[in-house]
Length: 285
Image (cartoon, rainbow, N blue to C red; front, side, top):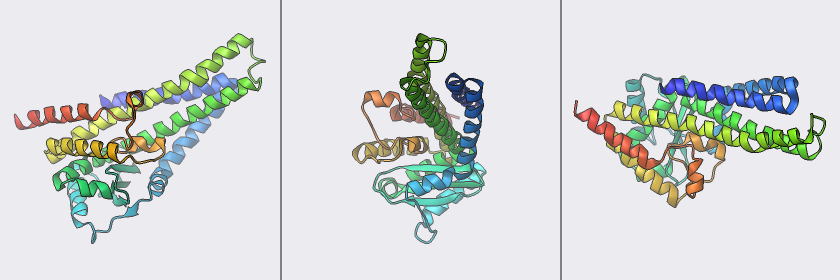
């Protein structure tokens, strides 16, 4: 069901991008938007992992320095049924983790130094399980493409705004229609793109939480980890590109209640409640 919902939302995001291109440039604009979206997808497919790891200044975690981390990743990878991904450390006291890569054969898991200091081994296992489920379900690629297209929609909206103010829409039918098109593109479309991206990301987070809990048989450990990470992220926020927020297990920066409405993650409290409910289901069997 989650896979079907994600496919629908991705198609909707792609269609919105092409529709906006059509409003700006007619049939030619639709064709340009289509090939631009295709280019964005190809770039995301081949280079997203390298770009993200470089942006985060992640360094490879050697097995000599982090034997327990390699052991956890290897054991869970075998249990989940994917190749063992590359392991990276992000040198920051902010506690968090993310996965990246276009498929299970070309994937990486990164954890911050702060996360390793804050969590115990069971909690780390829960976090790693969450990230490995993202890899197995190809969520890392889906979320990266969704974020890229949403960003491109916002770029098109800016183009539409400049086109209007420079008189580019004056020749189309009438000024009122041009104004309506501007409002539709410059205001409503970016909001719609953001909402769709958020829906995709939140759906995948719930699935990864459940997958980790079932693989480790320790849903309470993941719930505890989420609570600690959320508290740590609030006390020590990590300033990263907003387009990377969806990658982390917990949003790396907390905002006010308005910002939370546009969060790429479900509320941590709700995720914890679902995990504790799952724990009761698992152990009542």
